[in-house]
Length: 339
Image (cartoon, rainbow, N blue to C red; front, side, top):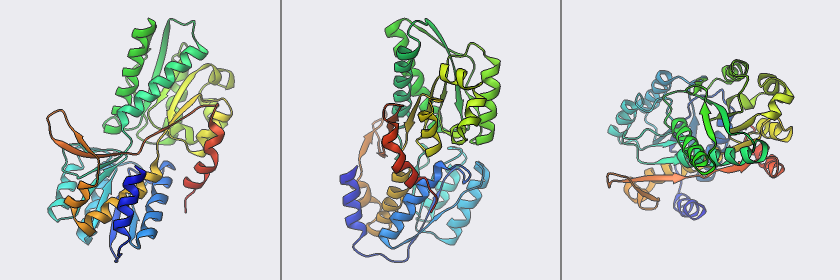
């Protein structure tokens, strides 16, 4: 990815005009997006262009579509979207493409929409990594248990990225079950919080109380983990209970790292939203500057099952536990602080 970034920046630095690009995350009330916005701003500064970061305050597919429509009418030069609903956003993507405005997706995809590039985490692989991490935690903390009961927390039930993570997690856990003979039980279907941090805390509280034999949680996002340590600990039933649970979540924001440090949460799979924001602007700029086709020639290709070619930039993940948490604090404090 570093080589790709260098090539695109060389192209982008030749000459910059007053282009304007839009990045539309799912919401603005989630601190995860601060890093994506910071990456966007740094890329815009490097390229000498204007970049706008706009979305509903809370995750709302209809409002997101309306906001993007406003910028299409204004005539921006490129749009990056993290869709709340991959199906509902297709009309808006088509509207932009019909007006010759390049569209990419970041963090969450909208397959079959016509967008040119998906840029972000390979969510299935990231979920699989989360399952492998959970498997190692079983071996470390509960090796004697033959049956383990887990709950899954998710955001919106329609979100492609979250569903792919859950699929990867379950596949890794199934492989672990087949290898060890241990039985993995999910107490219910994934519990949605609709990307609302307060709702996520309430879900943790209610479900942990409802299932006293719960062995652990998998959170396909970071929503409840942005709260203070004491809030999360209380939601999990107190420190003794929290330390007994096998818990894996997503992202590596400073509050989440504090939870790992306090031994109130066991592991994290960290995405790289700063890179998503930065590269989104760089890719859109080059699509405007040298054209879509020439830009796509620079990007990694993926051959799909039907033989067609897609363009996907995998920004990778970081796995964090108590053993390496100190390495991540300085960078996290920098990129997740809103500029």
